[in-house]
Length: 124
Image 1 (cartoon, rainbow, N blue to C red):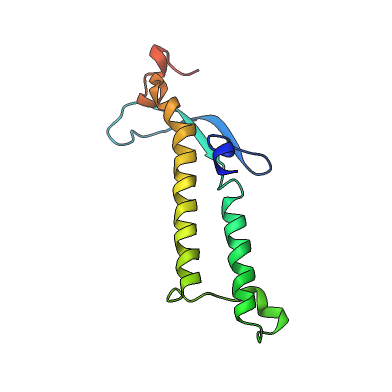
Image 2 (cartoon, rainbow, N blue to C red):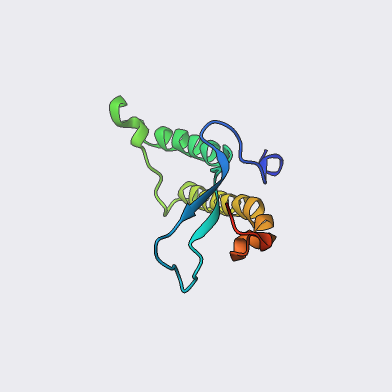
């Protein structure tokens, strides 16, 4: 699943959009007033959900005495093997998210727009 969804934005609340905006004052020493921006949200493409679901169920099994109303708040100690697995899995998922955004955004940085030249044209 992760390899198949790498470099995709998905559906639902996931998106990749271009937007233009104008600044009234120079930013970071640039005299440009109009910018083109790429904004995306792709999340973890279900990787984090699957990790959280698995380890949440495991945590609930480890705390069977919790009241039903708070059972979903069960935890895994980071001193336990399961807690360490969970932590490392979420760290890996974070790296996946970073790579996904990089793969989506990096090719766009090769256009002149990312350096403010807009390919030699001023944005309209």
